[in-house]
Image (tube, rainbow, N blue to C red; front, side, top):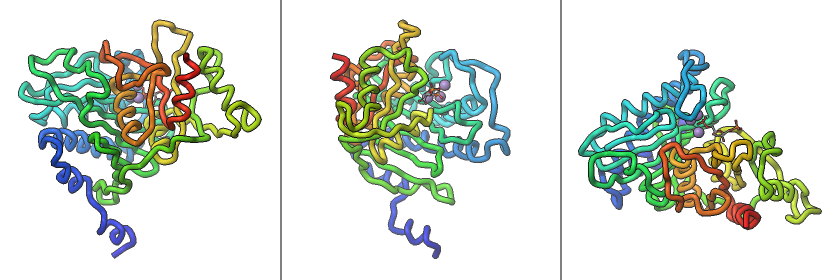
Length: 330
Ligand code: AHG
Ligand code: MN
Ligand code: MN
Ligand code: MN
């Protein structure tokens, strides 16, 4: 028996974990399972990269006004194909689709996803991921309103990070669990209930946008950059991966604060990131791990959505820092 087999023999597989979660409906467990199956297929494509011919531009655009990469389109289609086959899925919504997609009329669940987060990193072999959110569908024939539920109403959420290791991070609203993909293609539980420390000395922001930030964000980053002789009395370090899913995973593992603030260049836009596909699902994971998420003013998970592709400012991570940003916004 090799070292890995030895370690794994005492560890639970994702399937064993999911079966044990009988506080949630079997239909929800089955829906989660379909999302994870799709992610395993996406992972296989991601791993092969140029060998599978999946790198580069698709030559098309999406509803967000972004140029799509081949993998954005492939990952989106893999998720749609998988979810349509599941009778428990009533409908889905995706960053890459103009409108929601109806699946099975009898289904009770809605799945929302960012099929491939961190598109700019695909071709340069830096971590990317799939982010998902699951909602319970209200009665009636499917329409957009069914999807416009607050983040606090999510029944499950998580992500798969295709990184140095491929990890599945899932919350069923009873804490967070992390599973690592082994060499046989099986997710094995490797962290139970990671906690985001309240304090941190690490921040993440795209500083190339500094001249466009509003005053409170300028003030906040100024405080951090001032170091130990400044108002915060300590030196901070900085990281920016440009894949939100990877930044959240780093924060889940060792704390930190992540900001993608509102940009003054386009006052009609509330921010870059999407409430339904990015902020809410990652926000539920962060909250379930003891961290916080806001739009700089209020709790992200209490925002009433007004559109499937709604954008928001995002501040998330270690509680003390998220609170400080909120304080500076008055
Ligand atoms: P996506 O690839 O799904 O469109 O999302 C990219 C997002 C997010 O993952 C990341 O934090 C941010 O865009 C990076 O933006 P910059 O290119 O401005 O750094
Ligand atoms: Mn995109
Ligand atoms: Mn994204
Ligand atoms: Mn995306």
